[in-house]
Length: 229
Image (tube, rainbow, N blue to C red; front, side, top):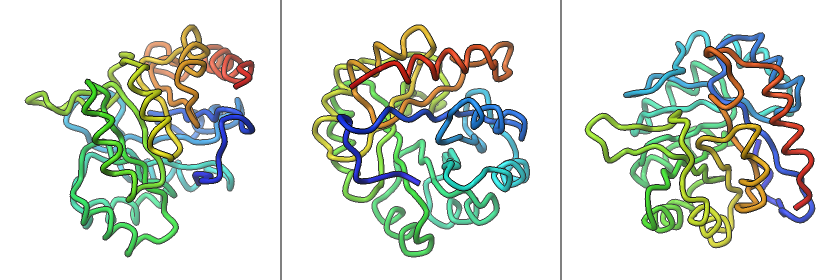
């Protein structure tokens, strides 16, 4: 789960490995030092989705102390609740905007389940969006999708965004911030220095031919661990 009493001065940056597809990938990510892993359910575009049955199977193998995130593009509470009950993850990552009453219903029906809202950093509107949802969620995840397109991009783009905006969001919302979007072993240290996030989130940057690459993953986590904030 997400630690609310965080301080970037006293706590190392955490690592979330996303797009986990097998039990072996989950175990590799955790063995290398990930504190959270993410499972992608049905999306309007992008690579990485797996079935909810498979998510449930992998999530059941995740040890205590490691957060399991379900990435969902659903926007109504009933559908999201049904997904969580089937997959049994402990954190919901909402990759699209949802009505305020969706947050309220998730809190009421799923007490103890973390809620992380994705904000796609396209321009300065991202700060306003983050401020508007901050009272209802446990953390914000900043990504590089584009929900304004006819077919929404809701993550997994492999692109970076303007980290200056991300830093403003991190400084102003008073919640843990996860930084995603185009991260890899070569740029993650720079990203952490500039944004000072609670955690970094990576998918394609630690994969080769679609598979989780232990060498890239280990390099990525070493780069994170060398940064003293």
